[in-house]
Length: 111
Image: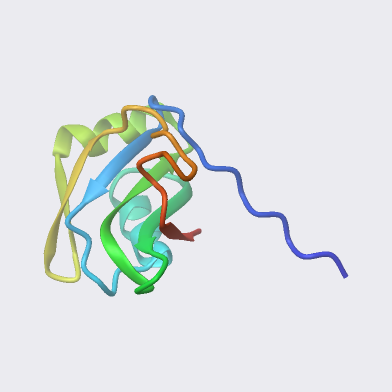
């Protein structure tokens, strides 16, 4: 049996937002649920984690099905997740990846 395909990293800046101030226990499933109920259908969530320590770095990316949902999230600017105010800002596009890129040493919780 083949392993399931890993979803691609989404970087459509019209449909993707950057989320910050995530608690250390925030999961992709929780972020997807809260964003989905507040803003619209979520296609993909990626929470960035430290590969060595295996803990969240406190930020991630949410890709919505429709650009209007991302716009609504950015306009609101924040949402509550487990008692923490999570900050929402526009996504500026994919950062450089690889050993020399800014995402080196990062893992992720993808939903």
